[in-house]
Image 1: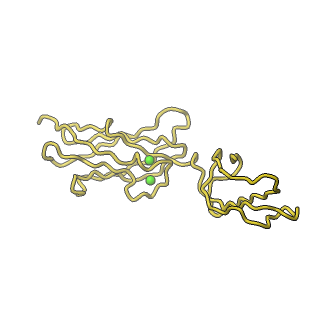
Image 2: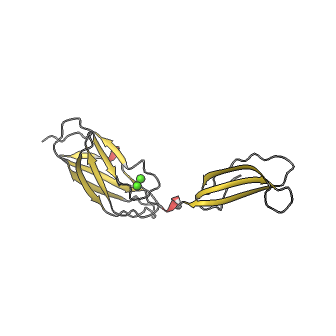
Image 3: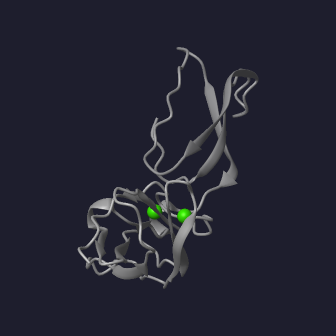
Length: 175
Ligand SMILES: [Ca+2]
Ligand SMILES: [Ca+2]
């Protein structure tokens, strides 16, 4: 069975046999809790020759995924110019992203630089929405891995959180 009109959320499913035709189940066959959103499938095993009642009750509402921002950075786009780390920050979601913070840490977790990221609009006009930040980084040993993290305190709920971090080994400019 596929759901089309349920709002995203957690649902309690209750499948039972209605033995006295009052549209209420009298014998429980199955009961479980599932997270559902539009177009999700529910698999059910139905016994033959029985009147069955499936009750689906929302227990928790989830925000619609399509109306969330999605801030993103990519290690491939981050580069060093002299001692300045240049980081393009994208919003690839479908809601405007509020202001947040970006931090750069060394491999021991020590913060080397931090900067405010301004609000970035959603790319609803299909043009990419990118804000490029420049962060001054102290002189580093060659080969130091930098860990860049966006919205580290996770104050912004996004479509995907896994694209908020990037590890880069910047090539140091010749100075
Ligand atoms: Ca994200
Ligand atoms: Ca987040």
